[in-house]
Image (tube, rainbow over all chains, first blue to last red; front, side, top):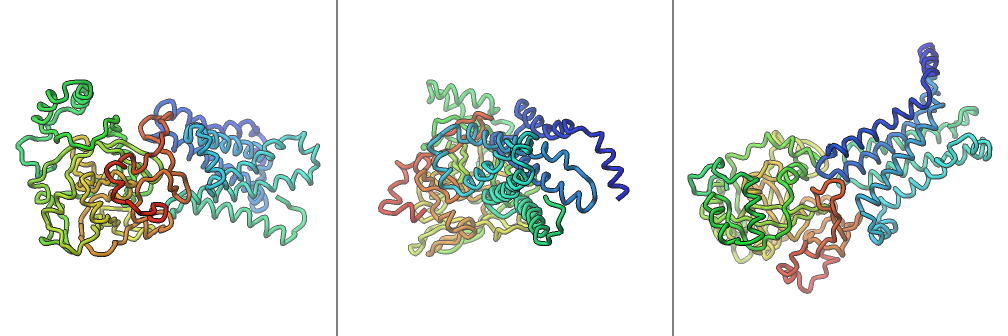
Length: 206
Length: 306
């Protein structure tokens, strides 16, 4: 644990805003690529896909914080709120690109997709899970709701990450490694919580 | 067009694309006949009937955005990974219910055919589309030459199987070689092409060099690439996407805005090439070729025979 302790010590000097800045780098890269024509032949698809993928990666990163602390002692808990809010930002931009650049506000088709297409329904449900989480990711809400209720509410993150991974899996035309690995990671990280709860080791909750 | 085009002109003699494109715009304006003659004299294919007057997608986009799973799943993979494909020598086996079966060298297939340009809309099942200036000849001309026997009702096609040069064939869930098929009347339809070029250049490898099928009223995956076998058969052949997901990809796979893919809508499509604000347009029945092909499917329930 010595390594972990010194790492935690070093991390104490890394402010939360630095993590936020880091999390905005993929967005800045996308904007730069968009402005310089570097998003490829179908820039809309690239943008949509990259924003969605980054959201999924951040959701998974948020779920890694607790196992990392339990298993290695490295404590990233104070960055978790920033990670979650960044995930929401990327998911919201992903949705916006789909509505505006991809479907180009063709509301009748959007409406049909929302009731008929499993991948769209699953994706929207995932986003819907993130909305209350983003709205309550502040100290005032934690105090207002009480720690226990707040924590219960934030278990929606498990549903969100599973829905997001399923959303990706439902889109591909043939089975390929990438969406399957993300789905496995999401299922594994959520299953861990379930195992911990069943084990009732008591103090540690995620 | 590579060798069968009996002429002593070389590719260096071809009109540079920019000039040719300018000429094309002029032609669209006025005096098409006057200007068409010099274009022909310089070795370009004859402008064919059925061409759309919609602006063609750029060669860069057509050859940089491909679904050719033999070279990877990503659209950019084929342009990168197909360059090692050997396309010369190339031969095509023609067998089954034909009078003159055999293994035909590509030169052989192209000798005596008139190559023409066909500017067709191309609609992918993934709801994007392009406009492609193909160079090729009608499949019907080839079928006429080899002699279709009375029992033949379908035409089956196969892509090259060469995992050493096609990295996508070394794994994955697709049963190689890629195969496709048409009903005989679809194959004989004058819109159905065997293409050997685009923009008056030989087909780029990632676009299915040296010879591919083009069936403009069907989703793009029906237009099988890098063909090595054409069989005339009595029974409906197995086709790759139908084998993979029969409820998503029917044998016919005609472009139809009213019949959705089970997982996404086919009502509209995005035209590739317009950047971030590429327009989404309504998808047309039979990809806009209904006047030519709707009669082939008279009386059929297209929601069932999709």
